[in-house]
Length: 153
Image (cartoon, rainbow, N blue to C red):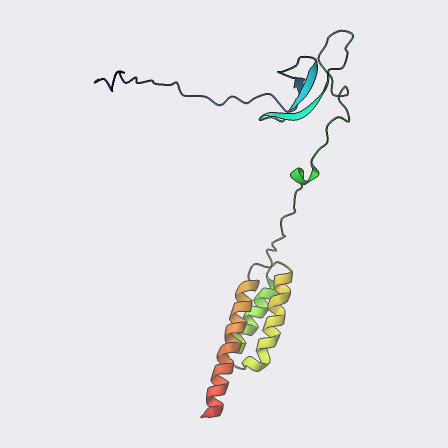
């Protein structure tokens, strides 16, 4: 190795760190003041502190010693239910079939029926509803274009 300026370069190999889980969330002795307790949130200290309760035997705190001292942020733990995706596609399949009829035969007659069936399938969270809606709208568009062109001719 060559010196860099007045110093020799130093190569340091650090050991690989293993991830050891910390203590569970709860009230522990404040590291800055042993007369107080501070709340540990599992990954770091919070600003919540309280005086250490007097214990006759100097034992560890039980869960009832600190009852009512912690306010829980309800929005943090809110769980939104997932939308129900139905495995049956009755309305969507009917809308899809009526969309094919609208594409092949009479878009003005079958198109609105297909849209209603596909929208009901969409409201029921059926999987094929979007495909049925797209097919019926395409059938209506093509039918309108073809009808306009034939009327002009």
